[in-house]
Image 1 (tube, rainbow, N blue to C red):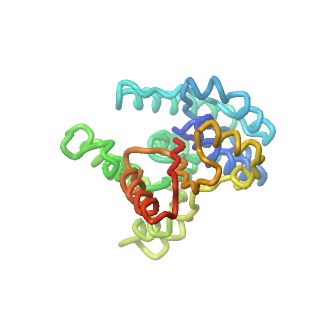
Image 2 (image 1 turned 90 degrees about the horizontal axis):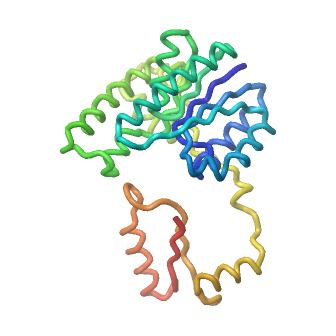
Image 3 (image 1 turned 180 degrees about the horizontal axis):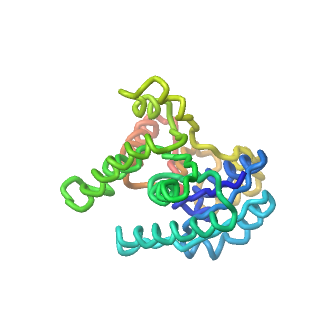
Amino acid sequence: MNVLYISYDGLTDPLGQSQIMPYLISCSEHELNFTVVSFEKKKNLKSEYQKVKSQLDKAGISWIPKTYHKWPPLFSSLVDLQQMIRVAKKVHREKTIRLIHCRSYVPAYAAFLLKKKLGTKVLFDMRGFWADERLEGNIWRKDNPVQYGIYNHLKKMERKWWYDADHMISLTEKGKKYICNNQTPDFEKKITVIPCCADERLFTTEIDEKVKISLKNELSINHSEKLLIYVGSLGTWYLGREMMAQFANLFERKFLDRFLWIT
């Protein structure tokens, strides 16, 4: 079966390589012919293109990387959306796509437009509640009429997409329960809960002791120090202040000596 996978996250992003690619490569083993359209940041595409392309080729996955535009806000997303729709139509003409898997909300606009025009089935991989996440993370603000207007529009579209989707993915059981609230009993059958997935082999590799010693020397960390390490993003909904408070508590009680941020 020919499947078009549309992602506004780039496969050359860390998130794309840790979450999206393992999922695609695993699914491609089950007689699914994937074509992936993703939006890549120029810097990442330049440095990671060959590695990503090699892995996808090996799995038999076709990849169409497009340029992600960040500026100006909103208008850049509209430009990317138009490009997304054009490419999706072209892929459908060439391969007769039976299913579109749209990852999150921006690709959903393209997917449901093609469903309406071409009758293609849509798997709405909504992840979390994207519009709410942006509001809660202060990326968008209620006192900004444009941003709050977009938020309200997306919440209306979100509910419409729930009904129009042939199937949906929620990250959590609580998300599924919220969606199914006040729906018919059959509604929950169209939702599958799939938590974020990753290739665990990437995170269980034993690190050479010499490498660990070298890194500690480079960072001026004493080899006897007890270390707490945070790996990930900062800002928005990531609780930097709360993490620092927890470390301070452990530090004062002599459980830890140092907090290392890797971001």
